[in-house]
Image 1 (tube, chains in turn orange, purple):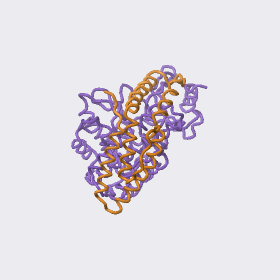
Image 2 (cartoon, one colour; image 1 turned 180 degrees about the vertical axis):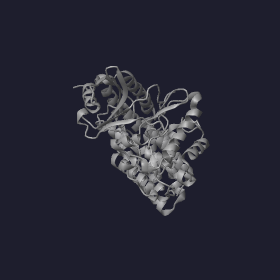
Image 3 (cartoon, one colour; image 1 turned 30 degrees about the vertical axis):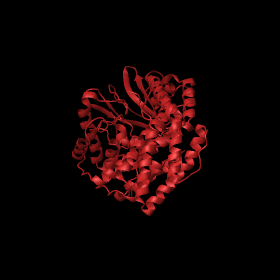
Image 4 (tube, helix red, strand yellow; image 1 turned 60 degrees about the horizontal axis):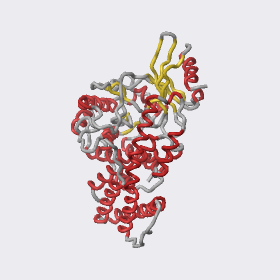
Length: 127
Length: 336
């Protein structure tokens, strides 16, 4: 998914360091700071849940695909995301195949997985 | 030369009278153009104006001429459009293309994710909002400046044109596979909607947060016309009804009125009937279009040096919220 957490944090740092032109102060600057604060709150949620969501999603898709390869015991976020790219592409192909074959049972399982994936990756605004 | 000085020189030329610029300030006004408020001053004459300038990187790549003509199309039409004043498509004087329109003071735009943004006035604002949307749909195209610049698809091709466009945006800007929105796109292609009774002007982003209200129930100005086009008028209705614009648990459309009320108000104002199958199609499409915009935001954020928080927010929080909406809708619809 994009943006990734490390990129996001770097982006926030760059945004804070970048001098604003005189016409971009006042309410506009205050709005930017508020938005950056919201992003930091969301980043804390991603830091807490993001790795678990990736590990779970990769395992769930692999199971649906019948991929029995054992996942690595240790992985960085980048490695989890790289594996997720492959798995998501395979999941899309499997879903298309199920639609073309009229396999309603498999489609239903995939649609249920989509809901669970979206829920696992959720971000919640404070307030 | 500062932006204020450049702007003053430009206004002096086009107004034919010495003009200075005061109180120039950037404001939040859509993520696809830089928006500034300022006063154009000549002696005791002071006029409040808005500058919309193309950014170096943008949430969505839109045609500023179409936006300008869309605003011009609805001046004086009881839909709270600002007044379009000057368009510079070359834009050399301000480094990038821009246009200037009238400024409406005394209003506020609610954040689309603000809880109960309209408070006690939600019902009144909602009635006016969906009435404005219906009036935009009702306006005959032949008299609209927008029709000079925007392509008018055949009614039976509206859905394909929009779906192709936004699928293309996802194809171009996606950095990570998105199985949920891809499934929705396939479903939309397999089961197209019936054509509209007629082609209409479509605002393209008419929703909570994209209008100014006075805090007492009046809508003062409809904003962000940058995605205006000609097409199926149900597209606007479906976009405003996307659950993204309502807080979880709030059954009202965009936190304003119930879905039934929204449809009744729109029907009365537009003079158009609502085909339930078509509206369902456009509602699923709305979530696809949303996901395309958020996908584009993530790319624009990365390409632009990761310095615009609104793009990061759209490409991250909003994209994930849209995935939740889409996945629930697909599960409700069931297998093909």
